[in-house]
Image (cartoon, rainbow, N blue to C red; front, side, top):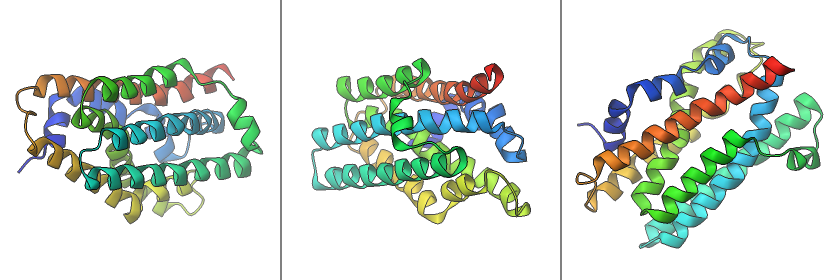
Length: 223
């Protein structure tokens, strides 16, 4: 039986494909992604995660149950783990300090995406907010699974560490939990009557994810 998340993907196949099979992902898979593109992505994703932590704090504020509060707490913990990994990679790969990362301005594409998510949560309910978050949270697990064979086949794959994180059982379980939580929120009622509105949130967030990858490639193109 299809989950609500499956139906959301089916409603926006072009947007989902453009995100999960973006040239940035294709180049990461074959190891040809320019280091400057990956660096730009990591810096901006650090800022992105800070805003996503705020979104999970908003989940806590809007929580109607202890389960929702626990989910928000766990989400913030996972995000803090990811930001620490980004700081570690940027230091090891590019010699950047935490101050270097913090002082880099957010890209307009980053601002547009993260504030869209926060607005979806502020003006909508928990389901709206979780749907806005889902292309990132669940999509990264799908991308990690796809890229894992390429990293496993090449002991010197330049992006093996990133791929290992998002293909890990820990992250795959995080994504499965997100799918289940969306399904539980939908079961509380009201999702069918406003499916088109929810689907538009999902499509917009998926387009924003594709724009996020493109941001890294554009930076590489300009040097």
